[in-house]
Image (cartoon, rainbow, N blue to C red; front, side, top):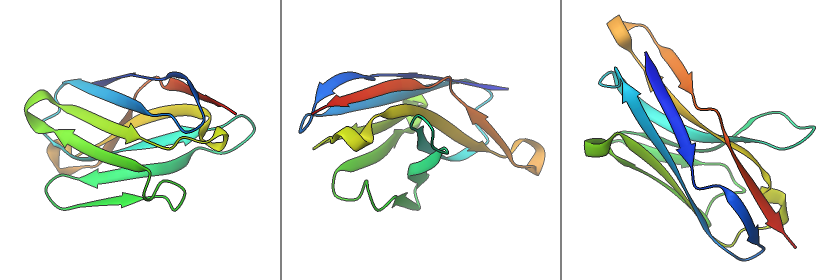
Length: 119
């Protein structure tokens, strides 16, 4: 089992920045990738940014140039630096871990952290 805990959300004015943190605990040694997703009221959950350890990163078009995903393997921590925030970024942000215990994929999710951007 892997437990994910997000933090760093909050209320910020448009143009501001936030840094989200996702800390993993438990059996995370098989986790090779992870990402940040978000869900706004009345909308489906969508990918924001994804990182495959030591390989690549991927971003939603809306996040490119403004958000940066990174991972600290030593601390089992995933980050999302969000700059130039706009009201449309308002959502609950969820951390995801892609893990392969015993060679089978299993995804884990955090409980989410609220990000609210005021205009």
